[in-house]
Image (cartoon, rainbow, N blue to C red; front, side, top):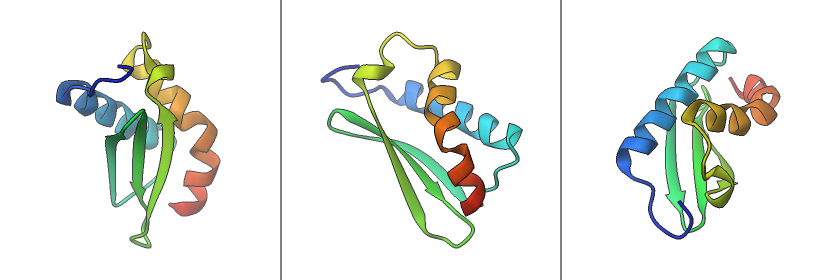
Length: 86
């Protein structure tokens, strides 16, 4: 993934994995999205107040991880913050 775009299928799978984890943790949202910006991937979270919150992580740190593991490694540290926003 380093230095080249992430394919749409991978982004779609990651999006679905994020949805599942949010649901399992009872975190509500209006919309979520996954995007990329240079060397980073972005998790876009629209809370019920309609504000979009952006959480970034390195594409390089994602290489070789399964989609489920990657989603968990990104969301687990921010779940307390997401609960406050939901």
